[in-house]
Length: 222
Image (cartoon, rainbow, N blue to C red):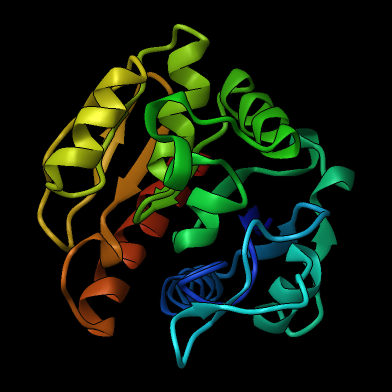
């Protein structure tokens, strides 16, 4: 039976939502392995709306779920309606949306708050022993939620010192890895990879995302 894998999106576009290359890499890697993909995003407005041509804020505000539907080709669910019981695994692509919309790390660093729907579903998965993959900046979400819960998560965002120090401040362990490598936390069943935390191109991003997806699905199979 195909593994049911949730993919958490946070909008559409690296500066204010999900990083599109990372999200698509995850979707392709899952699809080529026959997984059943359940795209989702939290309800509510994005923390910011950025013009990706000028790199400047613009209005009106946009909603995460509606913007993420662009990546999911309209096949997406409100995260509030998704239970960990119906999933075999969960994956978070990166992008500033992960650090602005899914949590407030972009503004608040180690003292960030995590969206309640994200916190709930992440804890449901981890407490059930189901694997979770996180790419790019998204591992800070696991660091905050699981570090606060005393689970001592082990994650990687690559080798960025400032972000690694913030992760350690959230009571998590950071492991330096290369641009296409993964970090595996067997105890919490987390798989993380840097993707665009490095100055790389789409092919490098895909290789890391593909390895992350492969390891997550291996964990699903036992």
